[in-house]
Amino acid sequence: MPEKRLEIISSLLNKEDCLIDIGCDHAYVCIELAKKGADKILATDIHEKALKSAKKNIEKNGFQSIIDCQLSDGLEKINTEGFNTIVIAGMGTSTIKHILSDQKKLNSIQKIILQSNNDLSELRLFMKQIGYAIKKEYVVLEKKHYYTIILYQKGKQKLKKRELELGFYQENLQEYYQYLIKKYEIIRNKIPKKNRKKRYHLKQKIKWLQNWIQL
Image (cartoon, rainbow, N blue to C red; front, side, top):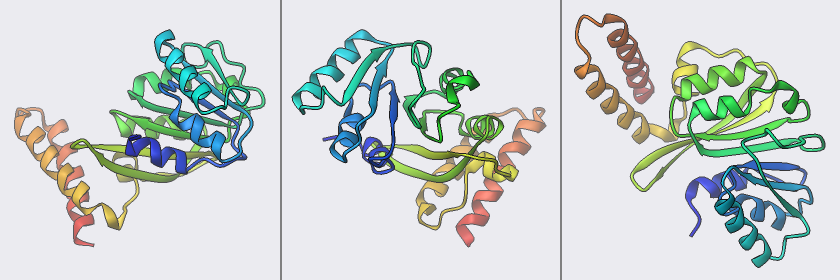
């Protein structure tokens, strides 16, 4: 069974998307997009073993003439011309920022789907700075962990501080907000009282979340 995260990412792609899947792993997203009728797809990974596994699955599904594979550290060896979409899932924010730091590589990229394992506020700020706007965020509970998937489109966007920190309010995420409150309260209680700045920062996030729960 594919992971819920990958199912959501796949649902955000359509046949008009010319995709570069960075860190493609087993190439599930690429294969699902090929099934929708897309005809320009590139599966990439930094690890040769992972890319071999991707190739095997691509051949098994009969899409070797549609999905190309390339060994690369992010976009380093990739010619992005002719592609309009990028997917990066399962990496940390610092790695994602490194991959997307070459602005010339993003000239043709209109759509970026990201699933970072950490530092989401830092990621939101970075994407805003390089000219991409949040269209939608998805939160999924998988194997007792919450994961956030963010769909970006090229464009400018103003974000309030709470939106950078927590994303946009979603009525259906009450359990997730409760989880975050407990998480931040535990972290805050472990911070020495003399570190007022960090404690206040967490207190502010808890307050925002509590207000959202009451809506």
